[in-house]
Length: 173
Image (cartoon, helix red, strand yellow):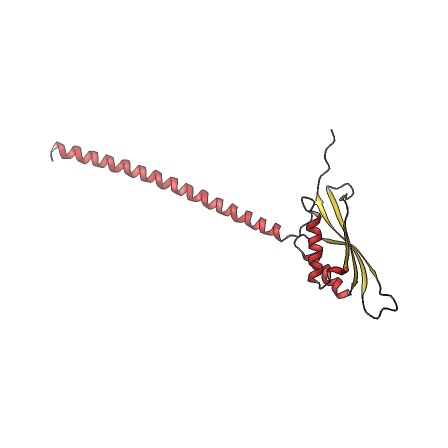
């Protein structure tokens, strides 16, 4: 074999060695990236499960005071869905939020006055309010029975519905 062939063969073997080490380095980098991606995927799946579990939990407190129109609209929609004529919805009176003891929560109460409704309509409306997206709580229900001379089963109802607002007290300077 002549010297030129030996030199070419040596260069070729050297180049093959360089390419081999280079591709091996790329393969190791790709493997490390795949392992990291697998860990990230596992972490994302865990976070997704946590988010879904939080979404399934009942909402305990709003993060802001709802606009009066939001609560009023929800009450009117619940009444309408319970087949209550809106003329029988006499008054909706929102009150100012009040701190619940020494907690970080405030309670926003809205008073609702209804006239000439049946108990079935009251129960349906209450159910609609409790299962709505902005979950309201029944704080109190006062029902006035029909008058003795009234032959129908029409009742007068005063509801107090509320929801909690998360609002930590502001630190004093």
